[in-house]
Image 1 (cartoon, rainbow, N blue to C red):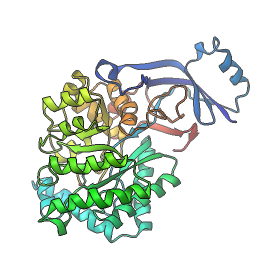
Image 2: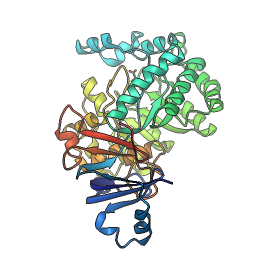
Image 3: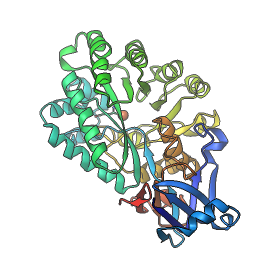
Amino acid sequence: MTIQFFKNANIYTPVDKGNPAAGKNQGVLDHFENGALLVEDGIIIFAGNIGNIADNTEIMKKLESVDNTIDCFGQCMIPGFVDPHTHMCFADLRESEFEMRLQGTPYLEILKQGGGILSSVESVANTSEDALYFNTLKHVLSALKFGTTTLEIKSGYGLDEQNELKMLKVIDHVSRTTPLDIVATFLGAHAIPKIYKDDPDAFISLVADKMLPAVKAQGIATYCDVFCESSVFSIQQSKKVLEAALKLGFKVKIHADEVNDLGGAGLAAELCASSADHLLAASDQNIEKMASAGVVATLLPATAYSLRKPYARARFMIEKSLPVALATDCNPGSSYCESMPFVFGLAVLNMGMTPSESLTAATLNGAYAIGMASKVGSLEKGKQADFLLLEGNSPAILAYHAGVSPVTSVFKFGEQVA
Ligand code: NIG
Ligand code: FE
């Protein structure tokens, strides 16, 4: 048994009340100015003001057998970031498409021309499992340096059974060889493969009837996701895949209303999805339906930034008591970004979220979006000691110190990992 004692920490943490934090609660944090964190075998046994330890006989006793005392010298301590939406498993960058977008070609037009996601599909098919592993690892370790300690990664650049399973194997390998907790999502319906161009319904049947059972048998993916969008997959096609996934015991989430308001947010509500992600074009009515159904809105401001689109309406969502999470969407097309501090800055300065709401979004609500909230997302008794130390006096530094990462150190299960 190892006991670690982190003292003199200026702790800010969301409070987990058993549900994602919504409405006014999204901005409510615990703040322990002279904070102490006591960790037994990687799990928090006390988080609070040092002054409150004296009344706690159990904790006083534990303090007698501390193995390591770590002085945080007044640094700001927050939970490790949870990034609940990434496509970090890819083979090649798509810099020439970025140039095309700068010159005015829309993102979905590049996909229609056979580029975009389909160009990543081609490079994944031509890349060995080992090479794909090292590429993915590079992005995951970069995210870790920026403070991400729990991460979701999607497949979706395979689009056939063999390559989708290959991607999930790589994600699993990265999960087993890095300190992060990684949740895998099957995104077989990410784009219409070239050979199904004239018969997308046949591809949807293949995903629902063949690929999903194979992914289930492989046992790596927990979630199933679809890209519900004009000229990609319709509401009916998305529903078919997600209903098949639910029947097999997957949890589900949706790329919803990223460019056009197709009603993906409403479908997420109907299926009680864990989250609906993007939502740049989501309607008022569907946002309200999501709130009633308990679906988390995972917002990806780095994608709006990179696509130069209007940001998702975070303020309206919070007013409607829809819990908001933040994620990078890290991928080689619409958002090449593994930095949660950058996303945090965009949320505060461009979406009007307060630093406190953004902290909840980047930690606890992200954990709910990927089914990890019982373990991570807040600094509370019983959760993993996954935390960050920051320069500055409050989480606002994450938006205030623009273009750099104020994260000075990263801890997973109480051990420094970056
Ligand atoms: O979330 N929109 C679909 N999927 C990703 C982009 C993937 C890509 O362009 O490679 C997204 O934006
Ligand atoms: Fe995405």
